Image (cartoon, rainbow, N blue to C red; front, side):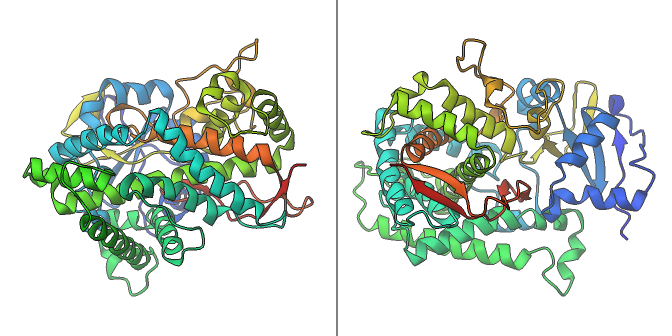
Length: 476
């Protein structure tokens, strides 16, 4: 067994060694959970109780620092966000992304592309009344697809991912795909593979010699294949869109980016940067929202009273003769509370690694530049000192005594600081409109009432529900 786990405290910058537990080999195996697809969150909870809100360990020669708890995360990421705004180096991802785009880049190119994309998303309706119509158009197609299943058990993953992906496609290319389109289904599978399998490849960053092993035990080839196939698909769409581009008459994000290239001859807005920005939007804008919808349905199956209560509010406030509107949100506190509790309970994104811009001290802790920083948002969502019985799904956490929705800064689904998700407004609108529309028409029931699907997640970049079938029974 490789001797790879060395836990340390970070008390005032000193490296006081801590014993992980009595069985050193067992503890080392547990430290790998973040990278082998198993859920390490329970282990992190134990270590937090034992070592405090900031602890570290080494994998190979790489120092890995875990930040836990609302106060510490706020101190590190908000108050000192400029010090920890970088993405860390990653052996495989550096070769694929080449430090371009929004997700994996740093410095000037990251700042300029993030700003450009944020502004242009608003130009194409995000955060405006046009956003609602774009989403509802896709909702109608989605509901029809569910209705076609006629109450028989089916896996919602593909059509849900396709629906959310179509909204990103409309923004980027002004185009949507049919749910049975073979090319778009492959696109979705590539995105899913990137999210689920990319975590396995993280070990190569700590143990580079693993890449010379004869077997693809860390899914490196699978991730490379998904990346190349997804890249080819998107580049073909970009090239096709370019043939009909008219300067200064943007129809979508691609047209706007081409206009920007004319305006500013800069490496920040190169062809490769344009591709990577589009790639990032597909990757981040599809999987997380689709998986949150699936988590909600899975939770409904396990908690039918929650589903019934949310539907009651939907029918009382909206009825069933029209689709929901974002204007209905403020009149639907329980629905808002359910969605917020899903964010907390599922914790789909539990932390994207960061890196220190330079050697620095934060709150008395020395943070070396080469350290990999993991911001454990799950530690906030499952904080027993703040959320009573956190493993229980309870929307009432976000309602006051008068039944009014109360937002909470401790719900960290979209991150915080300089690297916060730029698609939060779109994602929240999608979740409200999709879920309330679904409850207007269907009751979601388990395939087998005597054998409910597991609630254990599959851990990749995101925490996804395992495959499950559901019956969507149309309401009379």
